[in-house]
Amino acid sequence: MSTPDRLGRRLIQLYAGLALYGASSALLVRAGLGLEPWNVLHQGLAELTGLTIGVVSIIVGAAVLLLWIPLRQRPGLGTVSNVFAVGLALDGTLALVPDAHSLAVRVPLLLAGIVLNGAATGLYISARFGPGPRDGLMTGLHRRTGRSVRLIRTLLEVAVVATGFALGGTIGIGTVLYAASIGPLAQLFLRVFAVPAASTRSTVVAAATPERVILRP
Image (cartoon, rainbow, N blue to C red; front, side, top):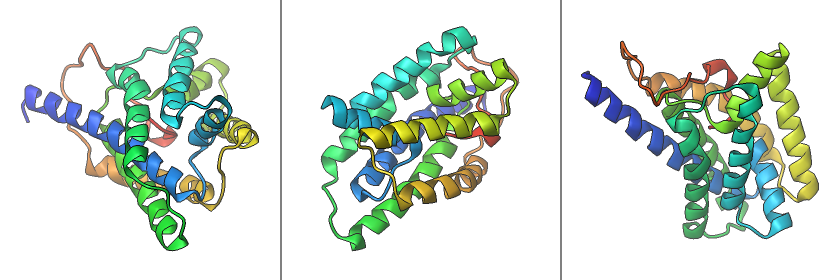
């Protein structure tokens, strides 16, 4: 694959992954059976402020990105794009998908949202345009504190879930199922969507998120 073709494929994967990530999050919202950790926080803040969950996601992403400065993390094209694209896709999908009331609809929405989230994660990370703001915060804290990625990830997720739940965010079986399945699903789709590495690095590329520390884009 030539370098222009490879770059074109990576850009398509980046923005398709971000759009699908936002869409998958919207399906989990409509299912109403529990959200992924950061969206529990986003939903709680949306309930508090009256803003849409997508707008809150953008604001939180930008705020988290500011925390990269003292951690000396370097954002990439994917990092900056993540801040806006996921939230816009989330709100856009919510506008198209109606509320679900029956479990016969909510359960398939939940399962579809989780699988689509895994595929979106594989697309986005395989593009190698830099980690999402929240992943970068996790890896930056890992480097600065010397604590394990597992510990940092656990502390961050517990903190955002607890805060979001206290503010009115939704946790439930979907939250547990997401936590248990997103790692294996993302690893599977990372292999499916892997792009051959180029011999030279683009100036818009930051270090990719290690596969073992997947949290969210």
